Image 1 (cartoon, rainbow, N blue to C red):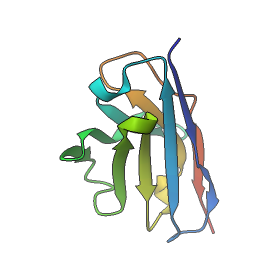
Image 2: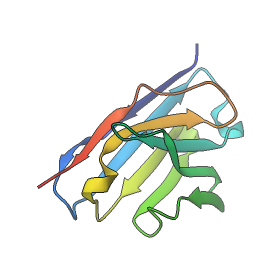
Image 3: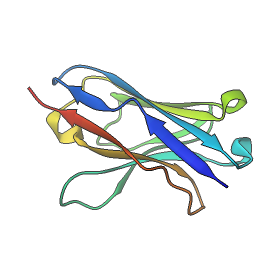
Image 4: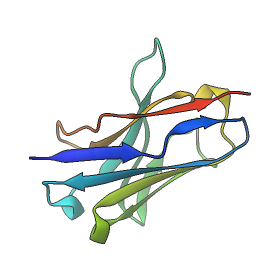
Length: 113
């Protein structure tokens, strides 16, 4: 049974940082590109960042320079470091194994003063 479990979300003020984590089980983690998506209220889910290997990453233009994706294949984990957070970053953030139907349950990030 495949499971993706996110953690690390919370309520922060603008300009602060958060680090999201996702731990995977039940799949051969290292062979999958991993992605972070987010969905804000009333909006469609959007791709934020994805990683195949440390040298092969994608970050959406809207968050480039503030968000960084990384992975630890030995621990079956993928991370999203979010710096200089803005209110428009408020959303539920989901971990996803690219090319599959495997999604986490999501972790809420709220950026508000």
